[in-house]
Amino acid sequence: SIKKLAMIGCGSMGGGMALLFASKGIHVSLQDPSVEAMDTIIASAEKSTDVPASMLSKHADYESLCNSLEKPKVFVWSLPHGSVGDGVLEKLMPFLEKGDVIIDCGNEHWQNTERRQGKCVVRGIRYVGCGVSGGYQAARRGPSMCPGADDETLPLVLPTLRKVAAKDPDGKPCVGRVGTGGAGHYCKMIHNGIEHGMMSAITEAFGIMKVGLDMSLDDIGDVFEQWNAKGELEGTFLVWISRDICRTEDPETGERVLDSVEDKVVQDYTGEEGTGIWSNTEAVERHVPAPTLTTAHYIRLASGDRRQRAKIQAAFGVGSGKPNDEHTSVFPPQKLEGVADRAAFLEDLRMAVYTACLAAYCQGMIIIEKADKDYHFNIDYAELIQVWKAGCIIQADYISNRLLAPLYAQQSASNFSANPLYHKDVTGDLKRGVPHLRSVVAKSIGADQVVPALSATLEYLKYQTSTDLPTSFYEAQLDYFGKHMFDRKGDDVEGAPMTGKHHFEWKAA
Ligand code: 6PG
Image (cartoon, rainbow, N blue to C red; front, side):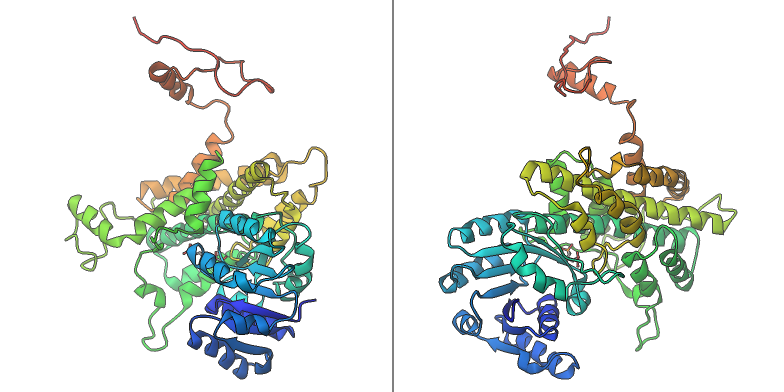
């Protein structure tokens, strides 16, 4: 087993993981361009009760770093994606030898991972693309880890990763063989897409409770606590932290911190994008409708540029156009109408949020299933669900324990499909959720509440389950101007080409 490793990248995630490895008796050699970052980790070890500072050393260059390791050398990376990792690999390469292992724990794009795996394999170097989830606190305590690499490499690193990964309530580590090549980073990217779909659904529920029901932050916090305690949203990390977000006070002012937070979810726009954008472009490129994920990202993009929103608002005749002047809306959300029984409506809202979260999971899994076929990842679905059982941001105990784990335990069955929408337990829950979702969306739309992910989920469930859509008309339009070709009713049978066979010279008399 691994006794020494190098941590390259000592930010909050790398720092947390360095301390975690060291707490498990593994010596960690730190490397980061910032000496301060390395010193902060060593100071945390000195203050801690579980990490002797002697288990850490800091290194100014790769030569000294590599000299501090045993053969084969093991490197854990916690770096920003893209060019940073490429630069590190280039500089590290002269010091690498056959058998050395790199475990890339950043949010890297899976294609960068596969490109680097190709570069490394010719020199006998092993490169694992390992998605790590749970944020900086989990990095220290035990994150959810999603590794992908060839089947000879993974067994070399899994025993060590099992020591540090989050454990589910049965004590089973949330790490395993997810798939080959860039599969680990691919699944982590989709994890983040699902994460944003869930975050938007919960955020929308917050808005409905705050303005639509005129509830206080304390009351909303109580609702989130109840949702997380039992039922379909039980053990949902994002619902749990929502409770804290409602209740947290700034000790200096005594005010709720949330009240001071501006309404913009900024996404870096540096040309190298990130998991939120990649997961959505992947969905479209794989021809998988994933509207819960995609719409969540759209509101994030719109929210991020608050200055633009202010200018557009002014062009609509509201406000001064200056982002700091006011907090207002062209179509201001109102109190909901027709809520005679608040408890019954809150139950609708709980089920609406659950339905959107489950739909987000389903959409994510369908993207992964398609990618598995297209890119030959050889995904182990049961392991993937195990990875997401604890420690990660999309942890949702009911969804994983009651629905997805039993489903993916059947992976070896001959007629198995990884598409959750082919499985009755999942579709039964979605069907049960729709009346609640419909009621929430209808009331919300009537009151101009902002409900992009909830409404997109409802639409998705309508069109994804229908074989009688109005899209005959869409097809006819395409055939009219583009000779697109269409199938006549009855043509669409298994085995026949999916594309249409008929064209008509459309002209009305
Ligand atoms: C996690 C999170 C984490 C985070 C990313 C994405 O699983 O711990 O997904 O990876 O959310 O930093 O942030 P952006 O969406 O801002 O790129």
